[in-house]
Amino acid sequence: VYMVSPVYLHGLFMDNLEVWSLRVREAPGTRGGVPPEQLARAIHDTFWDPVNRRFLVSTQLEQRSQQAAFYPDHVAQLFPLMVDFPLLPAAADVHYRDWMRQHRSAWLAQGRTDYPWGIIAVLALRRQDTDTARCWLRHSVPMRHSARWAVTDEVAFQILDSQGVREASPAASCR
Image 1 (cartoon, rainbow, N blue to C red):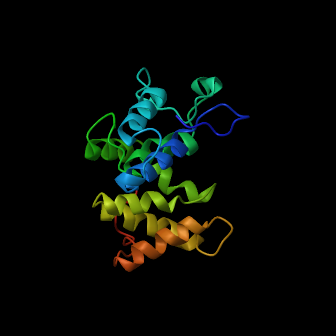
Image 2 (image 1 turned 90 degrees about the vertical axis):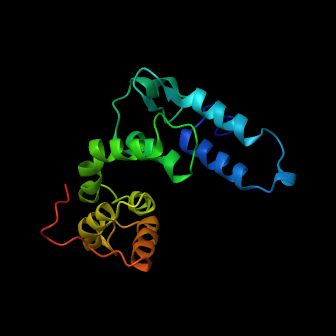
């Protein structure tokens, strides 16, 4: 796996997935180094925690004993779906539904204390879960142009808007 730097010899799960996704998208004749399939296996074997059935966010040992937080821990579990990583703990639809069942309410509430994580709304749209994307809009659009609105949230908003996704009605269950 790829390390943060020659000085800091630890790897980060999401960074490695980004490297993997770039490797997969390279033209076959331009690839150098480790083949994407081998890198995928190394990423899985390094970061998958079979005891807790989750991906670790880092190779740092202290990370194993820390309490899981929304970011980076819970967000990291969705990142493989965002880049179409093939080595998931379950089928992609099952993995996505399980995450939403466990973390949807916490995610939709993130904007009150952190950022609204619009990238997850884009993933919801990709997974054909338009109701969840609509709920994100209802919860998050009031934060637009505030200190809690990141560039990625604006991009997510514009992607949803361009696809005709509108805010969930007040009557919709967005928990």
